[in-house]
Image 1: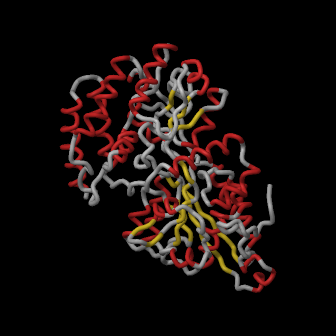
Image 2: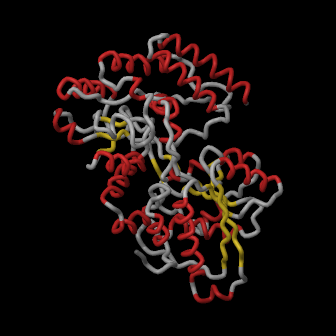
Image 3: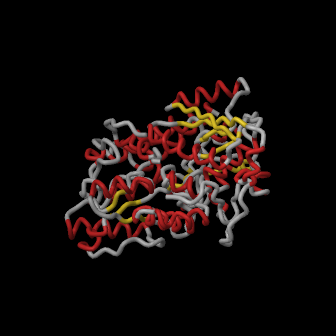
Length: 449
């Protein structure tokens, strides 16, 4: 799903944020939270064959053949479980997906089940194009019993749910346990502080002569703001979400300290990063890998380093404010759907059926329903088990993800990076950079609103 290209450190986030994304009988039901198996859906019984045939349309974004294959495998399992329902799939890559969906929305011909990205769902809800799913959740057509609300509320608008998360990821700082052992540094715990992080960076340099980590990006700044009860954007999304520029200044002043002491990799090195497999950490040149990595990137890190790596939350996350769970995609039902009940059955199957989960093998992110995780244990690899454990830790020490970014966020991000470069190359001070970022970002946000 990723294209290989030379990246400047400024745009690395765009690649790193890309998500990566055996059996019981096909009609396996999701057990309820207490562990007791739920009653099989009516459509999985022999009488289902007597139901009137239904053709269900689904659409999704696919940047690789593997995405198509994974989705098709679940579709086949679903059609076996519900023989009266025929599923017709369509998919597109890149912007073509959203272009096509916009055309269908304009002509009131959207497919029944629509795969939504977190950054896009607000727009479709605001245009009244999606169906609230609360009734289907209440009657357990879509079974969310026992699920932590943090996995549901990301698609809740005006107290109504408009999408079901199909898999989770979280930001992560990878670390090399062998390097930590050689340096005599204790691996980070949930209560790891920024002060201890800085001390450890110094220890890695003094004892081993290696970099502790890399410079931090806007992704880290957003978490830094959350840790202090602030947000990148205000509620109206027509301006920045914090008033005191001290939070900006502090974020950059500590990095300048690390930079001047040689505790983090030089900016010139980071400017040459070409992709996930590249950079100081996967090359074994740094103790930490915090380059806007996500939990589903662990396989790449371990393949590059040829050993297990550790996974830790960002420093300062112990109070539960900064970190968050990121839905990979949502499944939504078009408001124009003529078969919303069958669409809800498909979403339930894709999200909670054990066979479907095993077929997907966490490709779209880690499942989160307690019963599905329990049912998947026997098929998880050692790496997947550790990812599940990490996500459980994040879940305990996180708050609800911020609302999707405004449309002007791309332009704001460019300003942030330009200002960051000026600060790191010492062409301007953090205080001057804070003022410049505020002025330019607010102007962009006010204009685009």
